[in-house]
Length: 112
Image (cartoon, rainbow, N blue to C red; front, top):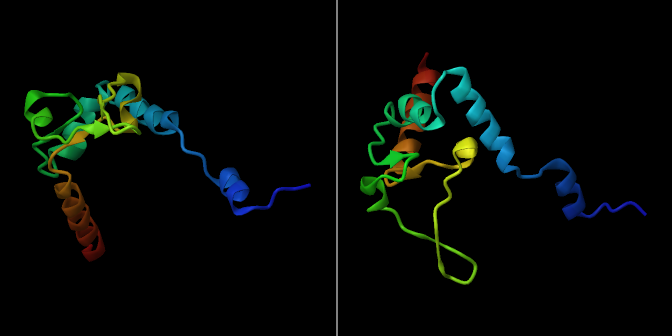
């Protein structure tokens, strides 16, 4: 019998994949002959004025981050997977600037 429940249908339409995000980030960096961290900093973080964001765990960024926690409420370490940095390697204390920057880009495009 065919399973037509909402959960089964959603599973057919969408499945999260770290590799699905990490591989394009790695490919873009390779295409530009740089690292994902350098590319993100140059093309995303600097233009948005995000000076407290980085893909590296620098002391300046780490000092302001709230530590992650696991399912048993224990402190969890940050993941450092250079080949899959596109999955979420950016650590940010000034993420709100990213949203504000996105609005500014959208406004600029809308007025062109």
